[in-house]
Length: 486
Image (cartoon, rainbow, N blue to C red; front, side, top):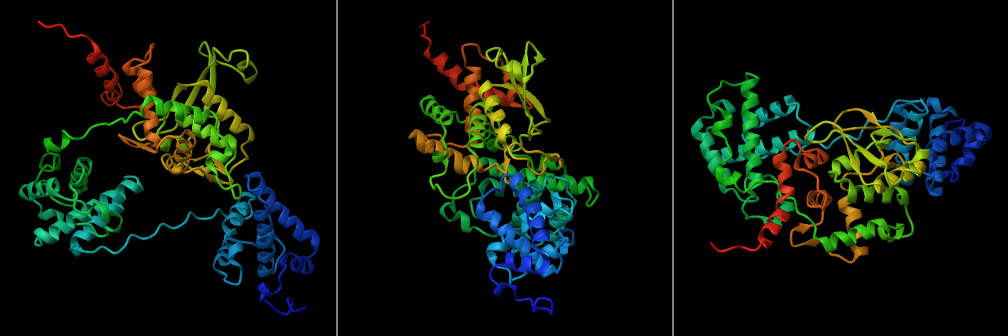
């Protein structure tokens, strides 16, 4: 009676499921709850706690919306649930999952991606220069991450201008002489110079910049002025490629540095990956866990696939294919031809080229197929490089595994079980070091790949990059040969 007369303090009622069933009837409420939970269960969200909270949230939403129909829960109504402080916080955490489930049922539009935080106000830069930088940022077609990095570099240049050349506030005022001054200043910069926030760099403040950072600052300046000239925003008074070229003294210190993992440590990591268990990754037995099939497929693909972390996280369902004598084979024949079958891995678009296919160890294909066999149906996700909605391989509970998951969770767990440190004399053991190690082993094996075969296997654009994976072993063998005195 109170509800029918406008009572809205639902948080005082306790069990909202009982209240919704009294108002709307058990059949309608149970049907609505079953629709939502069936979608979430299909995605792998089968935790009893999540199920109970989702059911309570559905009942709460129906009472607030005064309708037992899920179709009446529009995107605006769901957005109101996010900000309704009368709903307990534990339930508001599940509003996004409810919204995605309703979108999967075709009852509402898909939830918008979370809004990116606006960049902090620019400080220490002349206002005209800041406007030019923002104008370039809003016009450039670079990926969002690259645009952000270039913007920060140009603002750093603006702070140097404000300190050393305050009369220069716009790009059209730049001359070849000023370009030479900026190149010299970059060569002498230290960590913390001309940046707005340095809280995360306190331990390194005052150290010289790394050569790659210097080269990046000059590359950003070249791109900024080249674009401004090409778009006819400013007159062409100098050639950015020459006036802002990276000095030879800096370029000589830059090059690919494949940090191969020592053989004994690598062997222990391989053994650990082949014998991975849940308890190795999750010390706490309570809480959400990725399925062991996903963990094993992810680890073995990292160890044997030679992929970059971004490629690994963006692999798609069905990326494994099998061949025998150049012809596809069916699943039934794979058991018979296990020793002769070739496992092919489809690698998505990457930072240096388009998608390609390469052979990998059969254990990778077996692990991926074991995961695909139990993988819950997942909603498609946007591939940030191709802007396609695809079925990501390593996704569970409607959340894909991030590209930093290997570095932050998997590698520390493997090192702990193997009894090896997470760093050696060449630095931290990271996801890219597995790629370097397996590439070096393939080139230096008893039946090695040629340089161009290895280039194609790694997806390098140029063989010059691939050569850096071949030098250490060759030099070692050359140094071991006896020298004959002349």
